[in-house]
Amino acid sequence: MDDRHDEVHGELARVVREHAGRLTACLVRVLGDFAAAEDVVADAVETALRRWPEDGIPDHPDAWLLTVARRRGIDTLRRQAAYRDKLAALRWPPQPDPDDRLKLIFTCCHPALPREAQIALTLRTVCGLTTAQIAAAFVTGEANIAQRITRAKRKITDAGIPYRIPPDDELPERLDQVLSVIYLLFNEGYLSSGGDRPHAATLAGDAEWLAAQLAWLMPRQPEVLGLLALIRLHQARAAARFTAEGALVLLRDQDRTRWDRPAIAQAVTLLERAAAARRPGPYQLQAAIVACHAEAEAWEDTDWPQIAVLYDMLLGLAPSPIHRLHRAIAVRYARGPATALAALDELTPPERRALERYPLYHATRAELLRGLGDAEGAHAADRRALELATNPAQQALLQDRLGRPLV
Amino acid sequence: MKFVLLFMETEEFARELEAMNEAERQAAFERVGQWFAEHAAEITHHAHLRPAETATTMRLTGGEAIVTDGPFVEGKEVVSGYAEIEVADLDQALAIARSWPACPLVEIRPID
Image (cartoon, rainbow over all chains, first blue to last red; front, side):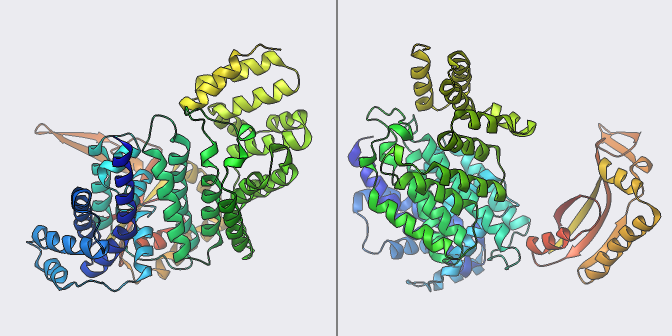
């Protein structure tokens, strides 16, 4: 694929993303059937991706998509007279109702659906990705993704999963599900981009877009703003994460002049808006931690004591072995390697078992041991990290470290 | 929409019940009774099953009926009862199941 082709496709994907979710949401309302609406929009999206590269993007992409969806829908729903008549009566522009898209998001991320299906369904119905695009991003077969989506849609209908915004007493829990789907999507894209998965980077962009839509739809939810700020703080520094050859660059070694300072400042403003609600949550705290890094002019300026405090707060709200590991890293710079190693020694057995499989745990221990003059222990820990690392960029970095002389 | 809530007991729950004194057990039963009373409008039918050791399983394969002692799966979790409810959607079924005060496992299944 050449660059020009990629560019056209990127532009098409962005236009589709802006309109497909709204159209699906509107059709679910009109037809009263999630699966049927999803089908006709997915079909219209496939048609658009075939036609637009040749005919050009229409002036009103939403009107174009609606026309095709309506026409194709009337054909495919031939036997279902009720749907067909409703579709035929539909005119552009359809009544926009922002609540409809929220319903769509909450239905796709319903906890009765398996997590992988939530992700695939959200990408297809809310972001307008085709099955082929999702399969490419996750390096899996198209048939696999298609089956996941078909099963999920069947379950929505058969198990009676409602199409609505959850009531207030269920909202925090359900919103949490939605936020974790978006965050997982972001991580999948962010962590695997630059490796052998050129499509993964677009997932990070889709996740940012989803978070932005959600923030627009639910501006009073501080955790939604927190997640958006977190994603944007990462995205603002993405350019400095890899060398031209695709090798991973550690935070300490990154060229901070390549960070997008205005974008960082905007994300921090967003985070301050979230914090004004005085309802701290895991995403706001993680964003605050990333902001400490992003706002430092140089590695040496990083406010490590503040980061350690934020990790303590995060652990209070969302205990997790990974956060404990990251806290230990902050403690290392705030109070030295001995204190940090002691913090790692305080892990509970289940936490340690979880981290033993995690390359960063061993790489961190290696750093701490090296800081304390234990070159051999450090070397062994680095070797263990390399055995566990799956990301090619991470592997290259560890290999480089292992290749250096022990002293 | 009709759903069945399948209540499942676990070994741990059975032990907890065993460890209760008479007053505690009475209170636990009362909580269950209260739950049924609160959801009387949605519950169309319900039953408590006798213990798993009273179950008999028949396997009908190859034209042969093989009768064995015990429930169809030998596991740590056994179905101990069910309630049929009539509600609008899965979320309402989940809301009712959420307030269930007894055994720790409930399967929610729509019925035709």
